[in-house]
Length: 75
Image 1: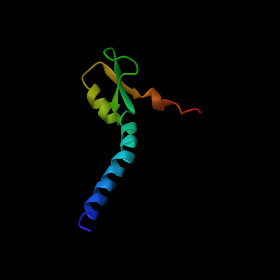
Image 2: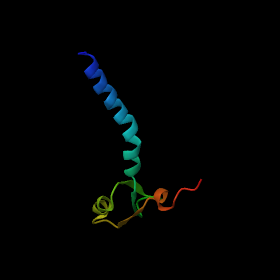
Image 3: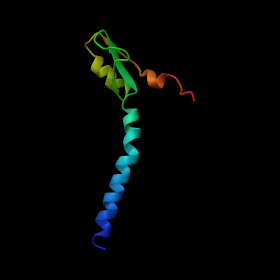
């Protein structure tokens, strides 16, 4: 019994990492920093618009929606 609890905890942690990782990664690139110094679509590492705007502050860059999320997916 003393080995079962740590093994269950390890299994739960593994399952959490495997199944929650892609969802968090997909949400991390909703907004792109765009400007003269960035190619298309830009620096797409921002999860929220305020994060992107903070990075663009004081530069000649602007924020836009990642083209990957701008249109619905077609099958």
